[in-house]
Length: 231
Image 1 (cartoon, helix red, strand yellow):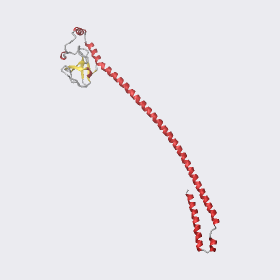
Image 2 (image 1 turned 90 degrees about the horizontal axis):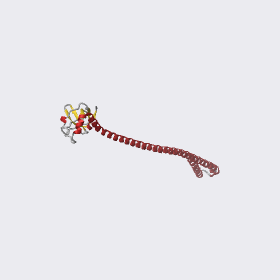
Image 3 (image 1 turned 180 degrees about the vertical axis):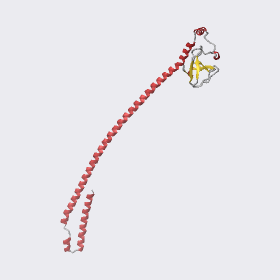
Image 4 (image 1 turned 180 degrees about the horizontal axis):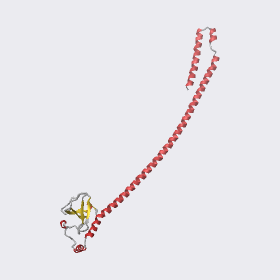
């Protein structure tokens, strides 16, 4: 494009110089000299045709080169567009797989914790039945045939249990660890401190939720749910 413009400019400049030279010779030189110096238009016209043809050829070459560059750029653009499309399809597929994995993970976690909750509830029910079973077993192990006969012959409503008159049996006592602090509600109960060890046992006529606890010279009723039986 630049070469074409330069050629056109040179062509125009050449024509202008010829015209100026012609005017100058007309006003300056004599007719004889003018005839000798004046350029022959028949000689300059073919040269102009050659310059015009060269400029046209250069213009055509520049246009063809520009079209070729455009085709190459379009081909490269199409290639990059195809690569980008394939990458976007891969990203979409990966995103879908990732979402599916997340859903499966959440469902698995929900099912796992649901089963854990059910097992914990079952374990809690089992632990809730242990104190009653311990109290019944201790009661059967402590009761002697003579005391059993007395229980059978005793009236339905026994007299209130007097803790100060209760004596520890020769067998059937156990050690227990206190799980929580407990404040005695009356003089028949024994206050407890967490993590201390006491001796416990049961006596006939006592509620299965309670045991008799001893700590040194102190003695009183203690709730079974506050204890961890050791032996």
